[in-house]
View 1 (tube, helix red, strand yellow):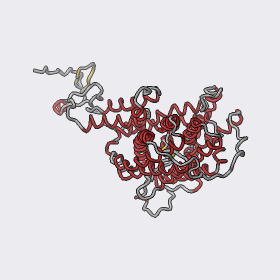
View 2: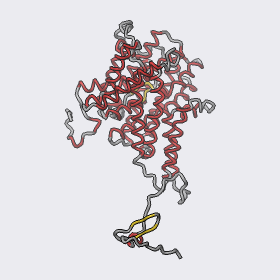
View 3: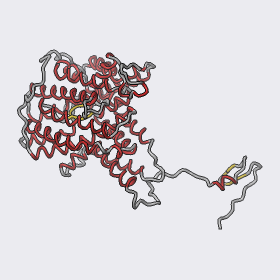
View 4: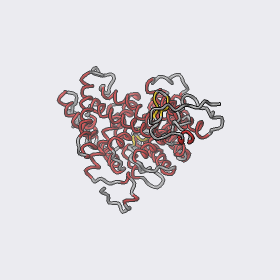
Length: 489
């Protein structure tokens, strides 16, 4: 392992590995390409809902990219009390989209959104220490459920990308789009089969590059407008006006902050499990505080709530590149995209269908990692199987039925519309109910309990001889003589 650290190799954590400039840039770019569509989606939606001009929409996007990079550096490199120092890419959280659009519709405008984000993040910073104490409530039973649902809940994203990424487009879901996604998928699988570890680790990035080349020949990638517009632009503080603070908007956004804290807790613990490093309450608390600090600063530049991107947790799993310095380079690339719009325009030319093919492997790997974690759970003579069933089922409801919670109170819908937070809450509560508060548990567990292992008493075992065999439920000795069975009295 190549490292410049003075820490003895025996004490070096997996996430502290240093891979060198070339590898850091390549793997870091791979992370950025994986999450780029997600990080620009939120400002695009908000800009459209606010009726912003194309120029202001572009500034909103670059502000979110810039703050995503700053937040990523804070999370990966850390400062005292802030940053988990784990390979977690940060960006604008999708959890707040509905709430922010609602603030726009009630007349708050973009300043109302920025004020609500800033004030609610301050409240989130105050309650973060409470969330940092929950690590003991995230055993493999809970963590495995959350990781599995993170992966499964992202599969529709991969499918949406594969179909073209724009449901309003005339070719959305066309065979050509899906064929392009299939080519990208085949490239990932082919490169993963290659004996070279370096190529295998870069399979996602290489499939995106090669898939884009194929897309050019198919007429599905257009780089003609890359040179149009500014090449360099630093996000201007308060460009969209001074934040305004409305109590109702702040309360609504604080519910979103609570969801983000739950999701970030799950992501930090999940990536810790994937990396194979210890995550205690102090480290989790540092990660949550980094999220909240970045979310407090983000509105100054016109950006929104910051949190870890689940799809990049999957990339860590599929590539086995665990270095936090790789992700720190992702932060530098995001900052460059935020101040160099031309680079953002280049990345934006990657067709969503190409990302969809790579995303299918990427997100499926997250689910597979969760299943692997669940395999460590003891299911004998307990209720763990029903905990897994209920938690995963609750997490998939908003995935398979997005309007399921449409008639519920807004605060409830905001929390449970996130499959990740729904899974975490259900798994934690049921784990407490069945495994911590055992009063009232039946000694004759229900049909959901996994069957106990077969056992033989020492007395029966001692009565057996060499050569004894069982045929059609009867015991015969080595000479073929039937051994009689004593009747119970």
